[in-house]
Image (cartoon, rainbow over all chains, first blue to last red; front, side, top):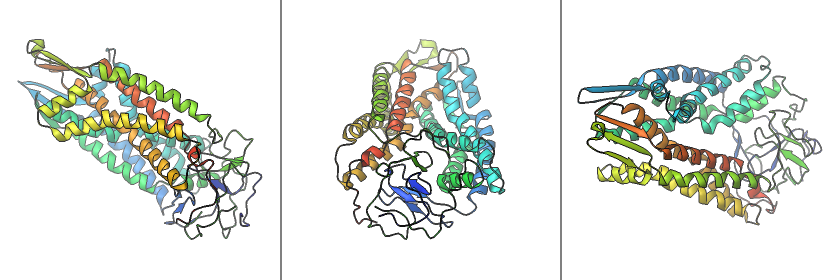
Length: 230
Length: 219
């Protein structure tokens, strides 16, 4: 049986359904550092970390700065028989500007550089007011939802492994050097890993809701409410 | 929903309670509602209808995977074609790498562009076929794990596409050597994208449907 807490089985107020297995849980405010797992499938439902918003904002700005370097500086330079070529990500696109493969390369630029930057902007848009304790911006909910659904499509780290493979393949053909953009991309991967460890979607959704957006007062859950049942 | 709870109690699902859970933010809503009031995500009940989309993307991915393997991935020209120009498909590229002794890189390319896509096709079709069938709790845990692996690993198949794009932009040394992408690069990229969409369309809540709601004593 569901133990008594502040929830409404008719409207779903105060309840959380696990997105992986549909098990119902009664919402409860967590302390920083605590982790909530689904009782059925053990998926992490929430794991708030202290100071996460400020850190995520900082990491988002880091992403934007590093990406500038990663796009415009060369990431590989090759020479053979006196012929040389240096390629920046931007140069890749220019090289195909009139080819039939332009769509492929544009898509690559979007996936490798565009989406990480877009996601960084969205995170800043969502989190800055929340970190300052103000009401979230009007489209914060949509921005955060987009940012989350774009996550699998931002592929900077895959691009780096690809660069490594390309390096080996071309090594027999010409001599190759790594450019500054390569290291910028490596930095981006570390930033990405760090921001993922601070990221807790549930906490951000709660903060957006608490901040006055799309709220219907259901945040006022009795902290002593014990979770789950029937 | 915290750690200190006893994990022995039976489980109530949103579906059984006549509610519908948002897959994006987790909020539960009355079953009649079709948009989440918190995050604006479209609410879908955990039923087999989502499998249609899974299969549609799955077939699209499979169809694009055929030209990706038959046509050349890239064309290498040395000394303006005098020294010969070579075209290589995915498999030929791997063999070439082995030929030059780059076994580890060959392994990366082989795993990323042959093993992973194949395993993904098999895993998604298995999940879609098994979805909604009766299973034990342990089986459901295994399926969820498989789903999470598929979801995580899918994007890594893009490596080969990136390699071709990088190489063909980089190796433009005019007379000396040049590399051009082949038609397989596009179809491989599409195949990977379609299978990613297929995996995303799959609703993992289907894995758990029809399971006994009494929870096992695992913590």
